Length: 419
Figure 1: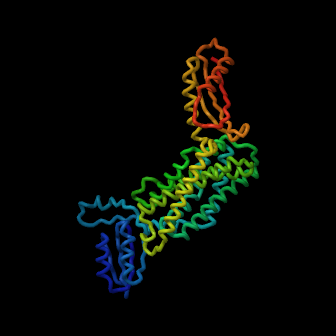
Figure 2: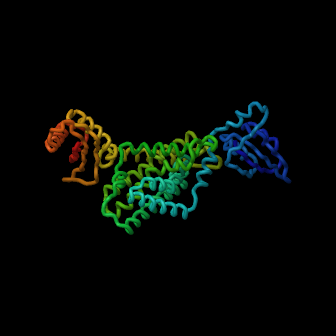
Figure 3: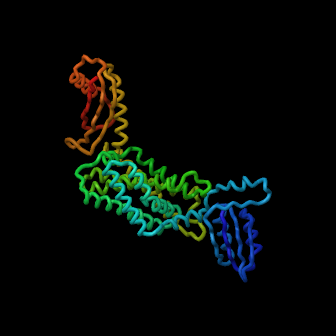
């Protein structure tokens, strides 16, 4: 439940108490303060917004809303356990005001973005994964992304514009920080971690969709109902944003355009995917809509148009991703081709496979992406010549491996271990 302190001009005591009862309020306290009536009211979370709308019918009320869970106990005592188990979502009013309140200062946004860009660059440069997690903790990307979705759900153009502006500013500052670090400590080639992160999976759209859903649900739920901390959800939202931001800065310095374009693709896809699912959660679960929040007069048409543009944008990006093999699908193609490689190697009875793997780089040969099929094996027949065996294996793979991807330049790295 939520506690409200309500002050209105005197003479409306009975009407207010009747309204409190109508909205299932409990343990109401009233006292007169001169010519004012003051009420301490305890309401179920989801009744707060509608109650305040009803109170607006009286003279201008003064309201203090305390955005924390309150346990209201009332007779009969035997029902106390049920009374405590108040796990209703927050009211639409509290969700919207909470989003506005979480905007924070521009100085903090720029500062955290710059620090995040430095941390992610160090992690990429030194191949240390936990520094990427640290950058995700610091990166202030979740707030603007969630507020943009709130703006669309509520039909508030000004909130949408300001949130997108803050999102773009945070991304730009992170890119500048990474670029400056690369300028101070020049790179001439991508590190292994940069190579790995620069590759996009065909499932890349799923992460922002679930991130937006999780982030919006966390905001809508009451604090006693949330099983996951807000910080953890913030990391989820930033999980696939901080590393690409660092890569853009480094890629710009090295003029490695495939890395820059793939990273920008992921950054834009994150915003669109998070925006779509978060908007739907806020609208249908949080009840944040142009007429669902007290005092809010948003545009339903704006929300519909923006959501439509987001859906079209995601569709266009998916079409681009799947029409440009293997530029934006290398991460998932590695796994798929490794399975095919392993299947064919298992058909060779005279070898034992110790390790296998398929890797892409950003290099091309004759304008064709290069893919390396690698395997480390042992010969079961020790009398067989290693060079002959290697030649037979490569010829077999060239002849028998079949997959749906065209325009790949295949190279083979077969290693035979001595016994």
